[in-house]
Image 1 (tube, rainbow, N blue to C red):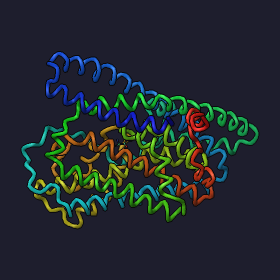
Image 2 (tube, rainbow, N blue to C red; image 1 turned 180 degrees about the vertical axis):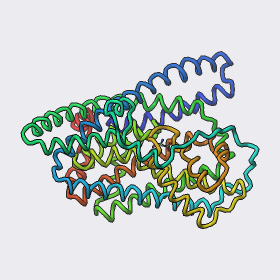
Image 3 (tube, rainbow, N blue to C red; image 1 turned 45 degrees about the vertical axis):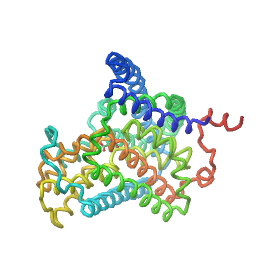
Image 4 (tube, protein in one colour; image 1 turned 90 degrees about the horizontal axis):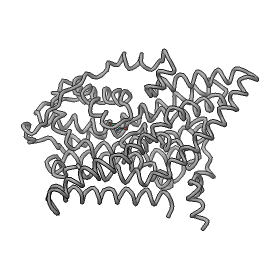
Length: 433
Ligand code: ASP
């Protein structure tokens, strides 16, 4: 069986096994001690351990991969004005897609009105953490110590340092060429590490999902069904409608092939709930499966994993409408415009790790004067929505990356159209057998 199929199967098995464990413990199948054993040794023992090792091994590669790959990319791009132009296009598209996402979310949120008649008493405790100010977010992009930036995994700072280094390499003549050649070799080796670790994905994905669904109460979804399904609907609309249309219009290539090749990456995003942890896999897929040149992908993908969060913006849009309705507050047109603006900026400041989107929602609510405690109403279903919006976040990064590459003449259409391109070695062997 191909690796992608095994990953998809692991995802489904994880959901089923986790769900069964959930029912077994809550219904007391085979006695309380069996339930205790399941919980202690399987869910919080084995599954937890394997899942965490899997996520750690992905995160392990993020900083070295971004650094090395981006230095290679910038060094070989050479021309600075081209870099500036490409960066402008990328950031512009990231902001534009996010603004579309949040507008769609607000529109659906006001049409479907999921927050009408919600019982405010069901809100669970939520104490808001202070969100960083816009000024701090901006200042924070510039590193004062590259090692610290890397140690803390501060992606924007690592990106800025790598761009500077790549630029210097391209301007350093003979020495620069030697360094560039060295970095290219290291890049190949790190990509190989991504490939090796991807082979363990089925076990990691299974464990993460089994643990999560074992502890997930489905009944909370019932109470918030309308909110939950509104977010889900807009996520699907954006992912399957907006992205595929933009992709088709700008590249002329098949959006179905695009989505198909992204399947495994989506499962990584879904099971880890982290665009940042998924980044190594996204980068590999975008370069080797979709045919985006390293000079584009090494910049667009890490940047996207850090600042482009369309799925998160969608949740924030529906959540804002929902909370306004639950508290019977009319935002008015100005309020909605302000939400579009702040949610777009908030998504830039949202780190690509689980649950941060909800924390950044406080910034949006604050701006339009909605009660931050309202977050307590939706927190119960956020874990599951987090997984789904992360899939959209990662799909958006890959879409913009392909569109920018195509416009720069750096999208290899043969690779894109070759169904076997970039399949992991073991998959290729399977395919040949
Ligand atoms: N988990 C999301 C991501 O990593 C961020 C969020 O919405 O919380 O993309």
